[in-house]
Image (cartoon, rainbow, N blue to C red; front, top):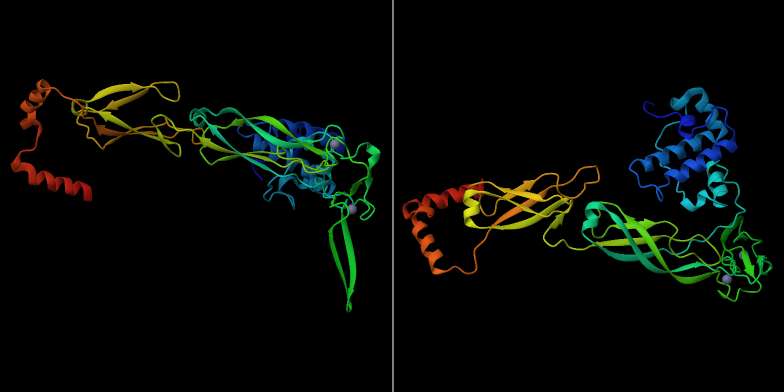
Length: 375
Ligand SMILES: [Zn+2]
Ligand SMILES: [Zn+2]
Protein backbone atom coordinates (compact mmCIF):
# COMPACT_ATOMS: atom_id res chain seq x y z
CA UNK A 1 0.00 0.00 0.00
CA UNK A 2 1.47 3.28 -1.08
CA UNK A 3 2.26 5.90 1.51
CA UNK A 4 2.13 3.51 4.44
CA UNK A 5 5.20 3.53 6.62
CA UNK A 6 7.13 0.43 7.49
CA UNK A 7 5.90 -0.97 10.82
CA UNK A 8 9.41 -1.41 12.19
CA UNK A 9 10.19 2.15 11.26
CA UNK A 10 7.00 3.38 12.95
CA UNK A 11 8.05 1.80 16.24
CA UNK A 12 11.72 2.63 15.71
CA UNK A 13 12.89 -0.94 16.29
CA UNK A 14 15.11 -3.31 14.33
CA UNK A 15 13.74 -6.16 12.18
CA UNK A 16 14.73 -8.71 14.80
CA UNK A 17 13.30 -6.88 17.81
CA UNK A 18 11.90 -9.22 20.46
CA UNK A 19 8.60 -8.86 22.33
CA UNK A 20 10.22 -6.96 25.14
CA UNK A 21 11.73 -4.39 22.81
CA UNK A 22 8.45 -4.03 20.95
CA UNK A 23 6.53 -3.41 24.15
CA UNK A 24 9.07 -0.89 25.34
CA UNK A 25 8.98 1.04 22.07
CA UNK A 26 5.19 0.91 21.93
CA UNK A 27 4.75 2.06 25.49
CA UNK A 28 6.97 5.07 25.17
CA UNK A 29 5.56 6.16 21.80
CA UNK A 30 1.97 5.60 22.92
CA UNK A 31 2.53 7.80 25.95
CA UNK A 32 3.94 10.51 23.76
CA UNK A 33 1.09 10.53 21.24
CA UNK A 34 -1.86 9.60 23.43
CA UNK A 35 -4.75 11.98 22.58
CA UNK A 36 -5.19 12.86 26.28
CA UNK A 37 -1.67 14.24 26.39
CA UNK A 38 -0.96 15.37 22.89
CA UNK A 39 -3.31 17.74 21.16
CA UNK A 40 -1.05 18.45 18.19
CA UNK A 41 -2.76 18.00 14.87
CA UNK A 42 -1.71 14.63 13.54
CA UNK A 43 -1.01 13.11 16.95
CA UNK A 44 -4.20 11.11 16.70
CA UNK A 45 -3.17 9.59 13.37
CA UNK A 46 0.27 8.89 14.76
CA UNK A 47 -1.25 7.18 17.77
CA UNK A 48 -3.29 4.92 15.50
CA UNK A 49 -0.25 4.18 13.34
CA UNK A 50 1.73 3.10 16.41
CA UNK A 51 -1.09 0.83 17.55
CA UNK A 52 -1.46 -0.73 14.15
CA UNK A 53 2.28 -1.38 13.86
CA UNK A 54 2.31 -2.92 17.31
CA UNK A 55 -0.81 -5.02 16.72
CA UNK A 56 0.82 -6.59 13.67
CA UNK A 57 4.37 -7.01 14.93
CA UNK A 58 3.35 -8.38 18.32
CA UNK A 59 1.39 -11.18 16.67
CA UNK A 60 3.91 -13.76 15.45
CA UNK A 61 1.71 -15.01 12.57
CA UNK A 62 0.92 -11.58 11.30
CA UNK A 63 4.50 -10.49 11.77
CA UNK A 64 5.93 -13.30 9.65
CA UNK A 65 3.36 -12.51 6.94
CA UNK A 66 4.31 -8.89 7.06
CA UNK A 67 8.01 -9.78 6.87
CA UNK A 68 7.37 -11.77 3.71
CA UNK A 69 4.77 -9.72 1.90
CA UNK A 70 4.86 -6.28 3.48
CA UNK A 71 1.72 -4.16 3.60
CA UNK A 72 0.20 -5.94 0.62
CA UNK A 73 0.26 -9.35 2.30
CA UNK A 74 -2.89 -11.32 3.12
CA UNK A 75 -4.67 -10.03 6.17
CA UNK A 76 -2.88 -6.69 5.99
CA UNK A 77 -4.50 -3.39 5.34
CA UNK A 78 -8.20 -2.98 5.82
CA UNK A 79 -9.49 -0.26 8.03
CA UNK A 80 -7.68 -0.18 11.31
CA UNK A 81 -9.64 1.91 13.72
CA UNK A 82 -7.34 1.78 16.70
CA UNK A 83 -7.90 0.46 20.20
CA UNK A 84 -9.54 2.14 23.11
CA UNK A 85 -6.53 2.75 25.29
CA UNK A 86 -6.63 4.86 28.39
CA UNK A 87 -3.61 6.99 29.14
CA UNK A 88 -3.40 5.59 32.66
CA UNK A 89 -3.21 2.08 31.20
CA UNK A 90 0.15 2.92 29.68
CA UNK A 91 1.55 2.85 33.18
CA UNK A 92 1.36 0.18 35.82
CA UNK A 93 -0.69 -2.94 35.74
CA UNK A 94 -3.29 -1.95 33.16
CA UNK A 95 -0.64 -2.47 30.53
CA UNK A 96 -0.76 -6.25 30.59
CA UNK A 97 -4.46 -6.12 29.79
CA UNK A 98 -3.90 -4.07 26.69
CA UNK A 99 -1.16 -6.38 25.56
CA UNK A 100 -3.22 -9.45 26.12
CA UNK A 101 -5.94 -7.97 23.93
CA UNK A 102 -3.33 -7.10 21.33
CA UNK A 103 -1.98 -10.61 21.34
CA UNK A 104 -5.46 -11.79 20.59
CA UNK A 105 -5.21 -14.04 23.62
CA UNK A 106 -8.60 -13.43 25.07
CA UNK A 107 -8.29 -16.75 26.83
CA UNK A 108 -7.77 -15.24 30.22
CA UNK A 109 -11.40 -15.30 31.20
CA UNK A 110 -10.51 -15.97 34.81
CA UNK A 111 -9.87 -12.29 35.30
CA UNK A 112 -12.74 -10.62 37.14
CA UNK A 113 -14.54 -8.05 35.17
CA UNK A 114 -13.90 -4.63 36.64
CA UNK A 115 -16.91 -2.47 37.05
CA UNK A 116 -16.75 0.99 35.58
CA UNK A 117 -17.61 4.06 37.62
CA UNK A 118 -20.28 6.52 36.57
CA UNK A 119 -19.48 9.40 34.30
CA UNK A 120 -20.00 12.99 35.37
CA UNK A 121 -21.53 15.70 33.24
CA UNK A 122 -20.84 19.34 34.09
CA UNK A 123 -21.72 22.52 32.24
CA UNK A 124 -19.21 25.30 31.93
CA UNK A 125 -19.53 28.85 30.65
CA UNK A 126 -16.51 30.00 28.71
CA UNK A 127 -15.60 33.42 27.33
CA UNK A 128 -16.36 34.01 23.66
CA UNK A 129 -12.69 34.66 22.98
CA UNK A 130 -11.98 30.95 23.56
CA UNK A 131 -13.94 30.08 20.44
CA UNK A 132 -11.21 31.92 18.59
CA UNK A 133 -7.99 30.95 20.32
CA UNK A 134 -8.90 28.12 22.66
CA UNK A 135 -7.48 28.16 26.16
CA UNK A 136 -7.47 26.51 29.51
CA UNK A 137 -10.33 26.41 32.00
CA UNK A 138 -11.19 24.54 35.15
CA UNK A 139 -14.21 22.93 36.73
CA UNK A 140 -14.77 21.85 40.31
CA UNK A 141 -16.62 18.58 40.74
CA UNK A 142 -17.53 16.26 43.59
CA UNK A 143 -15.96 12.98 42.58
CA UNK A 144 -15.81 9.55 44.12
CA UNK A 145 -12.08 8.82 44.41
CA UNK A 146 -10.41 5.66 45.70
CA UNK A 147 -10.21 5.66 49.49
CA UNK A 148 -6.64 6.40 50.49
CA UNK A 149 -6.87 4.50 53.78
CA UNK A 150 -7.56 1.14 52.16
CA UNK A 151 -6.25 1.93 48.64
CA UNK A 152 -9.74 1.34 47.33
CA UNK A 153 -10.02 -2.24 48.50
CA UNK A 154 -12.65 -1.49 51.12
CA UNK A 155 -10.99 -3.70 53.72
CA UNK A 156 -9.55 -2.41 57.00
CA UNK A 157 -6.38 -4.41 56.33
CA UNK A 158 -5.27 -6.19 53.16
CA UNK A 159 -6.18 -9.50 54.83
CA UNK A 160 -9.73 -8.32 55.29
CA UNK A 161 -10.46 -8.72 51.62
CA UNK A 162 -11.01 -12.29 50.57
CA UNK A 163 -11.81 -14.04 47.33
CA UNK A 164 -15.56 -14.59 47.04
CA UNK A 165 -16.42 -18.18 47.94
CA UNK A 166 -19.56 -18.30 45.81
CA UNK A 167 -17.92 -17.49 42.50
CA UNK A 168 -14.31 -18.26 43.49
CA UNK A 169 -13.31 -14.78 42.43
CA UNK A 170 -14.81 -14.98 38.96
CA UNK A 171 -17.51 -12.41 39.63
CA UNK A 172 -19.87 -14.59 37.61
CA UNK A 173 -21.76 -17.74 38.35
CA UNK A 174 -22.84 -20.28 35.77
CA UNK A 175 -25.87 -22.39 36.48
CA UNK A 176 -26.57 -25.61 34.61
CA UNK A 177 -30.12 -26.85 34.43
CA UNK A 178 -31.63 -29.84 32.79
CA UNK A 179 -34.64 -28.77 30.71
CA UNK A 180 -36.16 -31.86 29.14
CA UNK A 181 -33.52 -33.33 26.85
CA UNK A 182 -31.46 -30.14 26.89
CA UNK A 183 -28.88 -28.76 29.23
CA UNK A 184 -29.40 -25.07 29.74
CA UNK A 185 -26.57 -22.92 30.93
CA UNK A 186 -27.11 -19.45 32.27
CA UNK A 187 -24.45 -17.20 33.63
CA UNK A 188 -24.89 -14.00 35.56
CA UNK A 189 -23.28 -11.69 38.03
CA UNK A 190 -22.46 -13.39 41.30
CA UNK A 191 -25.11 -12.40 43.88
CA UNK A 192 -22.76 -12.73 46.85
CA UNK A 193 -20.15 -10.21 45.70
CA UNK A 194 -22.06 -8.29 43.01
CA UNK A 195 -19.51 -9.29 40.42
CA UNK A 196 -16.48 -7.99 42.26
CA UNK A 197 -15.06 -11.41 42.95
CA UNK A 198 -14.16 -10.36 46.48
CA UNK A 199 -15.83 -10.17 49.84
CA UNK A 200 -14.91 -7.85 52.66
CA UNK A 201 -14.63 -9.39 56.10
CA UNK A 202 -13.77 -6.27 58.05
CA UNK A 203 -14.61 -3.01 56.27
CA UNK A 204 -12.35 0.02 56.22
CA UNK A 205 -13.53 2.63 58.74
CA UNK A 206 -12.80 5.54 56.50
CA UNK A 207 -14.98 4.52 53.54
CA UNK A 208 -17.18 1.97 55.35
CA UNK A 209 -16.11 -0.69 52.92
CA UNK A 210 -17.03 1.20 49.76
CA UNK A 211 -13.42 1.64 48.74
CA UNK A 212 -14.16 5.17 47.62
CA UNK A 213 -14.76 8.60 49.10
CA UNK A 214 -16.37 11.68 47.61
CA UNK A 215 -14.04 14.64 47.29
CA UNK A 216 -14.04 18.05 45.70
CA UNK A 217 -11.70 18.09 42.78
CA UNK A 218 -10.61 20.94 40.58
CA UNK A 219 -9.78 19.79 37.10
CA UNK A 220 -8.12 21.89 34.44
CA UNK A 221 -8.94 21.21 30.84
CA UNK A 222 -7.97 22.55 27.46
CA UNK A 223 -10.51 24.15 25.18
CA UNK A 224 -9.63 23.77 21.52
CA UNK A 225 -10.22 26.73 19.18
CA UNK A 226 -13.50 26.70 17.26
CA UNK A 227 -15.69 25.38 20.09
CA UNK A 228 -19.36 26.24 20.29
CA UNK A 229 -22.21 26.04 22.77
CA UNK A 230 -23.38 22.48 23.33
CA UNK A 231 -20.05 20.88 22.49
CA UNK A 232 -18.86 18.30 24.97
CA UNK A 233 -15.28 17.59 25.94
CA UNK A 234 -14.64 14.15 27.36
CA UNK A 235 -11.89 13.47 29.87
CA UNK A 236 -11.37 9.78 30.24
CA UNK A 237 -11.07 8.38 33.72
CA UNK A 238 -11.91 11.67 35.46
CA UNK A 239 -15.38 10.56 36.50
CA UNK A 240 -16.44 8.58 39.57
CA UNK A 241 -14.45 5.55 40.50
CA UNK A 242 -16.75 2.60 41.10
CA UNK A 243 -16.98 0.83 44.43
CA UNK A 244 -14.03 -1.26 45.50
CA UNK A 245 -11.47 0.18 43.18
CA UNK A 246 -12.96 -0.37 39.76
CA UNK A 247 -12.23 1.68 36.70
CA UNK A 248 -13.15 5.37 36.84
CA UNK A 249 -15.83 6.75 34.53
CA UNK A 250 -15.36 9.83 32.39
CA UNK A 251 -15.85 13.51 33.00
CA UNK A 252 -17.85 15.23 30.31
CA UNK A 253 -17.81 19.00 30.11
CA UNK A 254 -20.57 20.66 28.15
CA UNK A 255 -19.52 24.10 27.00
CA UNK A 256 -21.63 27.20 26.90
CA UNK A 257 -20.05 30.02 24.99
CA UNK A 258 -20.72 33.49 26.37
CA UNK A 259 -22.04 36.05 23.92
CA UNK A 260 -19.77 38.44 22.10
CA UNK A 261 -20.71 42.09 22.67
CA UNK A 262 -21.65 42.56 19.01
CA UNK A 263 -21.02 39.46 16.95
CA UNK A 264 -23.52 36.71 16.39
CA UNK A 265 -22.03 33.43 15.42
CA UNK A 266 -22.96 31.12 12.57
CA UNK A 267 -20.49 28.23 12.54
CA UNK A 268 -17.15 29.84 11.75
CA UNK A 269 -18.78 33.02 10.47
CA UNK A 270 -19.26 36.14 12.53
CA UNK A 271 -22.20 38.41 11.80
CA UNK A 272 -22.77 41.98 12.90
CA UNK A 273 -24.78 45.09 12.02
CA UNK A 274 -23.11 48.41 11.41
CA UNK A 275 -25.08 51.64 11.68
CA UNK A 276 -23.91 54.08 8.99
CA UNK A 277 -25.03 57.65 8.37
CA UNK A 278 -26.43 58.62 4.97
CA UNK A 279 -23.38 60.68 3.92
CA UNK A 280 -21.07 57.74 4.64
CA UNK A 281 -23.25 55.39 2.62
CA UNK A 282 -23.24 57.83 -0.27
CA UNK A 283 -19.62 58.97 -0.22
CA UNK A 284 -18.01 55.86 1.22
CA UNK A 285 -15.86 55.58 4.32
CA UNK A 286 -13.24 53.41 5.95
CA UNK A 287 -13.35 52.75 9.66
CA UNK A 288 -11.71 50.41 12.14
CA UNK A 289 -13.05 48.46 15.10
CA UNK A 290 -11.17 46.22 17.56
CA UNK A 291 -11.29 42.53 16.68
CA UNK A 292 -10.93 39.10 18.29
CA UNK A 293 -7.59 38.38 16.61
CA UNK A 294 -5.93 41.47 18.09
CA UNK A 295 -5.67 43.28 14.76
CA UNK A 296 -8.22 46.03 14.06
CA UNK A 297 -10.96 45.07 11.63
CA UNK A 298 -10.97 47.48 8.70
CA UNK A 299 -14.44 48.17 7.37
CA UNK A 300 -14.46 49.69 3.92
CA UNK A 301 -17.84 51.08 2.98
CA UNK A 302 -17.72 51.73 -0.77
CA UNK A 303 -19.38 54.87 -2.19
CA UNK A 304 -23.06 54.47 -3.12
CA UNK A 305 -23.61 51.66 -0.62
CA UNK A 306 -27.13 50.79 0.37
CA UNK A 307 -28.55 50.04 3.76
CA UNK A 308 -29.28 46.29 3.81
CA UNK A 309 -26.18 45.45 1.80
CA UNK A 310 -23.46 43.37 3.40
CA UNK A 311 -19.69 43.66 3.50
CA UNK A 312 -17.79 40.40 3.54
CA UNK A 313 -14.35 40.27 5.14
CA UNK A 314 -12.84 36.89 4.32
CA UNK A 315 -10.71 34.87 6.71
CA UNK A 316 -11.27 36.98 9.81
CA UNK A 317 -13.96 34.83 11.42
CA UNK A 318 -13.52 31.82 13.70
CA UNK A 319 -11.26 28.83 12.99
CA UNK A 320 -12.87 26.15 10.83
CA UNK A 321 -10.68 23.38 12.19
CA UNK A 322 -8.80 22.88 8.95
CA UNK A 323 -6.32 25.68 9.51
CA UNK A 324 -8.65 28.21 7.95
CA UNK A 325 -10.97 30.86 9.27
CA UNK A 326 -14.51 31.78 8.37
CA UNK A 327 -15.64 35.25 7.29
CA UNK A 328 -16.93 38.33 9.02
CA UNK A 329 -20.22 39.49 7.49
CA UNK A 330 -21.34 43.05 8.15
CA UNK A 331 -24.87 44.25 7.53
CA UNK A 332 -25.09 47.97 6.73
CA UNK A 333 -27.93 49.77 8.46
CA UNK A 334 -28.99 53.34 7.99
CA UNK A 335 -28.28 55.42 11.04
CA UNK A 336 -30.75 58.19 11.80
CA UNK A 337 -29.68 60.75 14.42
CA UNK A 338 -32.08 60.85 17.36
CA UNK A 339 -32.10 64.63 17.51
CA UNK A 340 -31.49 67.11 14.72
CA UNK A 341 -31.62 70.85 15.16
CA UNK A 342 -33.36 73.27 12.82
CA UNK A 343 -30.17 74.26 11.04
CA UNK A 344 -29.44 70.67 9.99
CA UNK A 345 -33.05 70.12 8.95
CA UNK A 346 -33.06 73.14 6.68
CA UNK A 347 -29.78 72.05 5.09
CA UNK A 348 -31.25 68.64 4.31
CA UNK A 349 -34.45 70.28 3.11
CA UNK A 350 -32.41 72.22 0.56
CA UNK A 351 -31.06 68.91 -0.79
CA UNK A 352 -34.41 67.15 -0.80
CA UNK A 353 -35.07 67.52 -4.50
CA UNK A 354 -31.60 66.32 -5.53
CA UNK A 355 -31.62 63.30 -3.24
CA UNK A 356 -35.20 62.14 -3.72
CA UNK A 357 -37.05 60.45 -6.55
CA UNK A 358 -39.22 62.79 -8.57
CA UNK A 359 -42.93 62.02 -8.79
CA UNK A 360 -42.63 61.27 -12.49
CA UNK A 361 -39.95 58.64 -11.87
CA UNK A 362 -41.68 57.08 -8.91
CA UNK A 363 -43.55 54.34 -10.73
CA UNK A 364 -40.44 53.22 -12.63
CA UNK A 365 -38.43 53.17 -9.42
CA UNK A 366 -41.03 50.97 -7.75
CA UNK A 367 -41.03 48.61 -10.73
CA UNK A 368 -37.22 48.37 -10.70
CA UNK A 369 -37.31 47.55 -7.03
CA UNK A 370 -39.86 44.78 -7.63
CA UNK A 371 -37.75 43.33 -10.47
CA UNK A 372 -34.69 43.28 -8.25
CA UNK A 373 -36.59 41.52 -5.54
CA UNK A 374 -37.99 38.88 -7.89
CA UNK A 375 -34.86 38.12 -9.86
ZN1 LIG B 1 -11.34 2.71 52.69
ZN1 LIG C 1 -18.81 -13.75 44.00
